[in-house]
Every structure is written in structure tokens, then in C-alpha cells.
Length: 531
Ligand code: CA
Image (cartoon, rainbow, N blue to C red; front, side, top):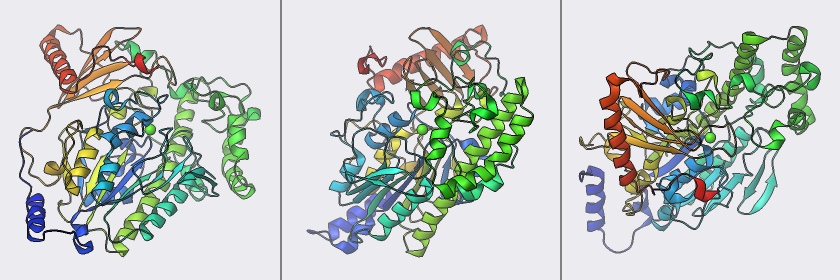
């Protein structure tokens, strides 16, 4: 990359040159605070400033309005734990060692929180962690056990396991505000504020139930996709049609009889009949009373007039959307509480606020829920960054950026040189409007979790540029897919074998090879080595 001149960097060098020897507490804030807000499985289609027709998200929209919204922001591997490992290390899965959700994160490796700590930052993570090993590089950590529950979660605080009573999105926010309130004010802070929501099995906050359970949503254009020309898309197990009546739809056996959903395979406890009863039993008596008051009419209506065929798929879609979007509503409200805290404590100006999700999600597109595929809905992540001290608001940017870029960006703003082995690029030139024309023109993707785990999405790698996407599905198939996103934004028309697009395919195959070399992807990199 071309060296890019930063006014901010120049000024901080000048400041350091003028004040030799020790760094005083008053100078520390020249390193901006960092508030990194990440949700789990929050699709762009569920953010109003990304054009959502489904929900209003005024607080996330505020970050967008006062900062930069990215329209081409992607993950390197669209699944929870691998995305988190990329965030921390700035390295692809084949470098950080975490290819799929079965792998443990090697917590001894270099991460950006460790480097920020060394640079004088106070670091903390609160909420979802999901990396199996305990957090390292944080002065304070308080994280959910595994995926965490929507209500009454168990969390581990600096090694101590603690139970909580209440709604998890609110609890995580309370804990994050506590971190801010008790912070060491002589240091800049970096707080990772990570929600569990809106991860499956979507349970809204009690106070939102009366509103969200009455809503009906428009059907996506590809809800009844037939997957022509797309074998991997056809052979997955993540269709709304196959969602569990119990865990997903939250019905009881007397409502639906025998469980018919396949639910994506995966963990035995989630697919077991009676899973929903188990989760419901974990609510307190008071919570369960309110829950039942709101869901009992849905159960009654289903029992009295059970939908079938396409009507059942539409019914499941609506139930899915109600619970998913209800979970998002609380996330948005709670982000508002944290933004208000920054305002009230004079922190808004000098704090970089990032809003993102560990990846996107399907909200009925292709008939699906879940993620994993390199198609736009799950390959994309929402991304907005606000930093009033140096970044103009109301910007929309269409450069190709990745979750690989977070670590280098934070190090750049902290005045720490990017380590040689970190693979992303700092977003600072883009944020500050000084990026040259040499920003990356394509992104590389690789998904590994097959045939193990959930949802039967075949292993694949691919390349996307500003217009086209080439995907290679492998392992037990050998299929190529090519999409022209300018004419086929729904990605239903596979052009890989279309002679009219042969030159484009050849060009992208070469680009895929180039990226494999650039990112030092091993020859035998298929995911098997982590089995
Ligand atoms: Ca996720």
C-alpha cells in the first residue's frame, strides 16, 4: 500500500517531539477511546439506515448519521467464533488457527487488545466471547458462558462464574456502563461491548413482546427459491421451512404434535424435543407469566387453525421475524443508553464508536435463516464508524473493507505500528477521506465448517470485486458459481458456465489465485487439519 499522510499522525508526532520523556496523564487522551459494539448475527436488512423495510433502529442509525456507513463491508469466514478470532488478530482463519466453531482460540497469540494494553490503553470485554479459552489482553473481562442465554445468563467475570437475573441484552449493557463508569480516567479505554442478540433462538425482551408479536412483515423475493444451478444452495439445512416447532417457534408439544423440523442439525440439546420447555423453565416465575400471556394466544391460534404447505412456511417466517426483530429492538435501545452515557460524560468527541455484527444473516432470503454462505446477506456485515474528533459525519463509503481491518485500524489510531504479520489494512485513510486509489479491489473468502456442525453448508472459497463474485464449493462437490451483482443482486443466476461470461470467470479465477498467494493461504488449506 502507498504511504498515506495523516494530519492526525503528523500532529501527534509533533506533540511527542515537543514533549520529550514521560507521557503525562493529560496527553493520554490524544489516543482516542474505542467503543467497539458488536452484535451476533445482525443482518443489514434489519437496520433502518441500511434501508430496512422491517424495523426502525434509531440508535444504530445515529452512529451511521454521525459517522461513516460502509456499503461493502465483509467478513472473511461467515460464522461466529472464526469472525471473532479475525477481529482480535487481524488475520485470516488459516493464520489465527480458528477455522470453525469447533476450534479453540489460541489465546497466547498476538491480538490488538494486547497491543493496545502495551500502548497504555485500559482494555475490557463484556458480553459474548464464544472462543472457548478465556479472554487475554483485557484488564477486565466479564463474558457469557458459550452462546449465552437470552434471560438470566451465567457469565464469567475475571475467572469467577456468576449468575444474573434479567434480560441479557440489558445486563450486558449495565455491565458495559459499569466498566465506563469505573474506568481509569488517566488512560484511554478500549471497550468491546458484545451482544449475544440477535443470535438464535431469538427471545425478545418482555416489555417488547406486546408490540413485536403483533407485527407482520413483507416476504422476501426469494423465500421460495428453487436453487436452480446452485447445488450447494440446494443441499443445505438452514431453511425456515425446517425450523423447529419447539426451539425456534416456541410452541409446546400439545400445539404441534410431533416435531418435524430438522432445524439444521447441530447440538443435540437444541434439536431435542422439549428444548423449548427447558428454556421456558429457566425463566423466573414472573418472567414466565408475562411470556405466556403474550405467546399463549399464538399457540391457541396455531392449535385451532394449523397452517400447512406454503402457509406454514409463511407462518414460520413471520414468527421468526417477530422474535428476531424483537431481539434487535432491545439491542438498539440499549446501544442508545451507551451513546447517551458518552454524551453525558463528555466522551463522544474523542471516542471511536464502531457498530458491527460478527457477520450478516438470512432473513428469509433463499428461504433461509443462518449465515455461512458467501452470498451477500451473510458475507456482508453492517459497519458504521463514528469519531467526531477526526471523521466527518453523514458519509457513505463503498470501498471493499473487511473484519480483517479492525485490528490495524485501532492500532493506527493508538499510534502503534501494525505488526508485519497482521493481514488487514487500517481504515483510517478511508474514514478521514485521504485514501488513495490503491485501496484493495477484491476480497477473499473461505468457509470451512462441513460436514461437521450445523446446517450442511459445503466448504467454499471465493473472490468478490466491486461487481462480480466467483465461488468454488469443494470437499464432496467441485462446483463453481459466478454472479453479476449489478444485474442479479439476489444471486439466483449462476453464470459460471455461461460462455458470455467466460472471460470474467477466467479473470476472477486468476484473482482468486493472486489473493491466495497474497494472504499466504496454504496449498492444502481445506479445514481438515483442524479436525
Ligand atoms: Ca454470529
